[in-house]
Image 1 (cartoon, rainbow, N blue to C red):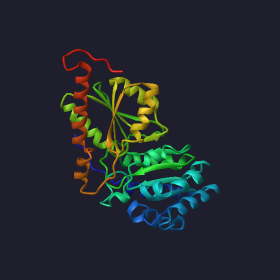
Image 2 (spheres, rainbow, N blue to C red):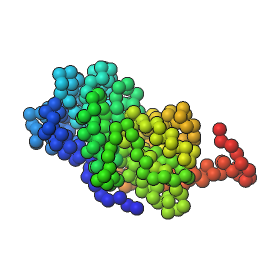
Image 3 (cartoon, rainbow, N blue to C red):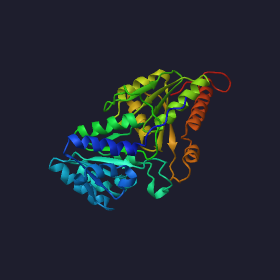
Image 4 (cartoon, rainbow, N blue to C red):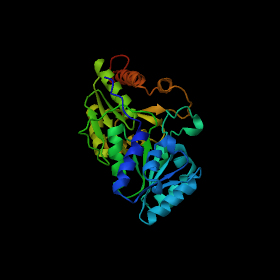
Length: 329
């Protein structure tokens, strides 16, 4: 089934921080000259005295944020993920991650759908980079309901955070009774044929893919991972055990992101076959959203096709071309 339309998470980012700051005077926003694109301009309008325009100087911006954190502020970084993670990585590593300072980094324009900005403004390995840093927690909400709660949790929990904030509107996956829990994954469906694991806004597409697969007689367990680090290994091992076959789907590189984290965790906790669907080891390109998602096979229809093909290949391997059983090791 198609999910209802929802807000862009960048809008939720601006709205939520604006509300949080009304009751918490420690919250300040530092922007890298992209407030109109990231949603931070909403905060600037309501709290101009706590909005710091740092210009196109991301390394310096992260350094200023570190300094503010040392004197009790809760600085929130507003810029594109490619600039925060790529351009300012050493500032994050040395000034924020190593001392474990209370800085919140919001990476906007994540994934493929970056408004035709091209490969220079796309980054597909931000999760891989940030999860390699000790002390840093990583969040990737799926929709407006989860994003609001995740932002509030990020501000409330002490320590460095990195949050992916998608540009485009995301369908609404969760109802008003949903409660985000930091460090916990969410089981959205239960099925014994395959276990699907996803994160961020890609989960909305994987949910629709799972519904389409159910119409073809394939029942999937779907585990949504809004907290990529720390990873909910218990929920992951439990979900993997249901089918013994895991497919991780993410709008990230297949190298080092959620797929890598899942493979690492399951190799210790619940060894099963893990396949990764995502962006291969390439740089991206721009285009209309639907066409780009189809090209990189991350639309709901393409994910459903690829999962079905992986299951067919697995069945052939398990039973062998001559009908005999072949054991997987």
